[in-house]
Amino acid sequence: MKAATERKVIRWLHLLLSIPILGFIYGPVADIPRAAFAVRYVFMPVVILSGLWLWKGHAVRRWLVAKS
Image 1 (cartoon, rainbow, N blue to C red):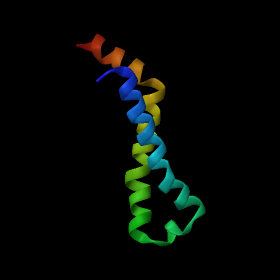
Image 2 (cartoon, rainbow, N blue to C red; image 1 turned 90 degrees about the horizontal axis):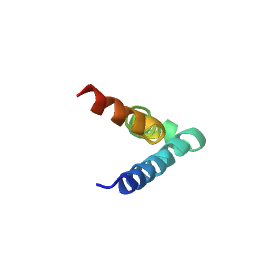
Image 3 (tube, helix red, strand yellow; image 1 turned 180 degrees about the vertical axis):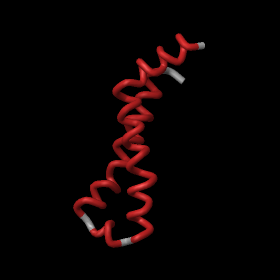
Image 4 (cartoon, helix red, strand yellow; image 1 turned 180 degrees about the horizontal axis):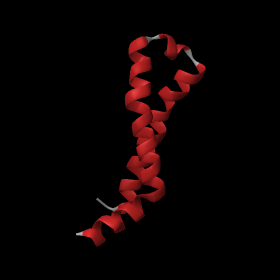
């Protein structure tokens, strides 16, 4: 996969999974136990990791290549 395509996919994943987090903060999602669990333990970690990958993924990739 090209780097540009990978970045687009990760960016869209990051944006789309942020929508339920906004619903958790501003909407009634926090009152629904299963949805609140999904936001806290699935969506939030994926959004954090995808943001970190968009920010510092090039450095991590360079570090992994140098190590092997």
